Image (tube, rainbow, N blue to C red; front, top):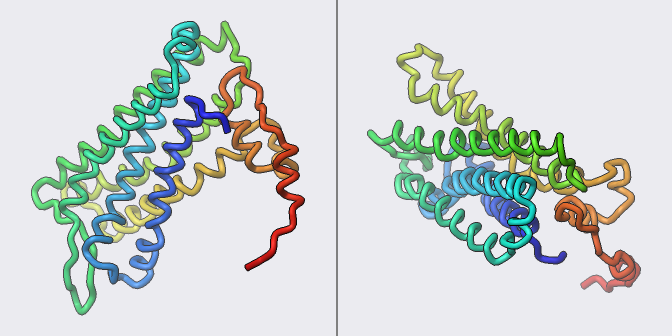
Length: 276
């Protein structure tokens, strides 16, 4: 694909999802065996990967929303100042901020022996509530309010001046909705866990809710790549075209035609490969 601002956003989002999914099997083994056999370093990395994915994903969705809002509201300014180097610089700052917000988990994640089993847990001690509230505010509430504001502005503008292509808008809508649906249960049960005694809630209820919330949050990283492919133009034609062309079609800039030469792709398909 040609490098554009859109592909810069979505590539970063894909990297975030991949890093989390790469370490996800460790968490699956831990849940299946009720212990952590991978050591302290992997305990810290596997847990931090989920939070890094949380912060990087939501901040990237904020960047995509703000970028789309600016593109619709100030098209002339965007044409002159919306460049790939600037987008790359903003993405780097986003990764630095996401890593900084993940540091508390990286520091406080520990392992311990309990009934002949090694457990990976977070020892926040007295700072648990502060960390959870910062995670909620920075990783959900503030980003969601910014996204909601951008959407409101875009909807007003689209009524008077429709976009040439709605594909990027549909992809962004699907990504944001999936993020909201997948992460709300996680944050909800984290808050319930902090106020377990005050609310007189069942420990099993909160534990099962946290397990479901973490599972649903993990599913978001697996859901995103599927959305990249199937939210393009003409869903019924998806399986009849190459996946690469569908991804490019979904991420195309507004009004920019897809210029992929599919003959090259089909010629590669027709070659005969010798298995090793």
